[in-house]
Image (tube, rainbow, N blue to C red; front, side, top):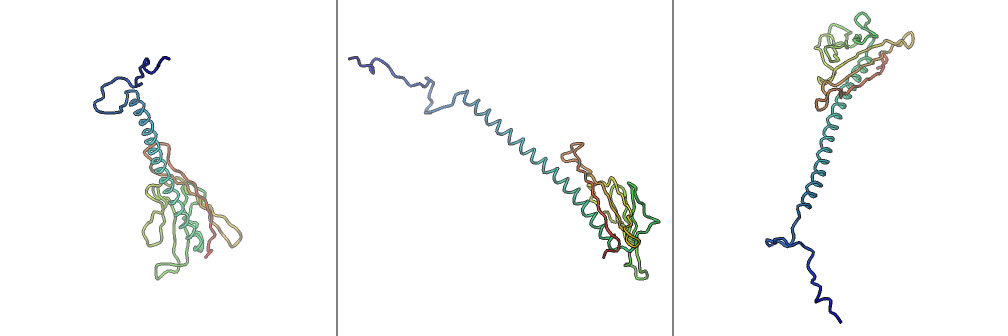
Length: 195
């Protein structure tokens, strides 16, 4: 019989490269593949982080516009409900730059038994002016009032309502990108002397 073990010289499949005391090493191709995979993963994470930050900035801007509009509508509705009547000579109805003047029975002045409250556009803000008091902006400085419309609605011979429509938009875009401003349109109505 022939002994095949002695005739065939089994060698390791490893290449004969200098070993510098290391048992295992990486080939250039393996390093290129590892760097490529790592770059793809890192690029994906960076893209996701950028997208998440941008979405967060947009959500913050939209929330600011919504909260500013909600607050303004709540204040106007409250003032309408506690008012005795609409003061027609200074009110502007069904116009994009409307004004609403309300007559209320309670007054901060001791000599008078009634007072007036006005809602109007001042610059890019929605403002409230009470008789003998300073002007108060109801909307945030980061929000523009683009439309203010009041409509007087007669429900019956004795009951009157006021419908309010406002359009608001942010003064800044998230991350400075043009055309991505947050906009909102709000509408409500309230009866006079409901309290």
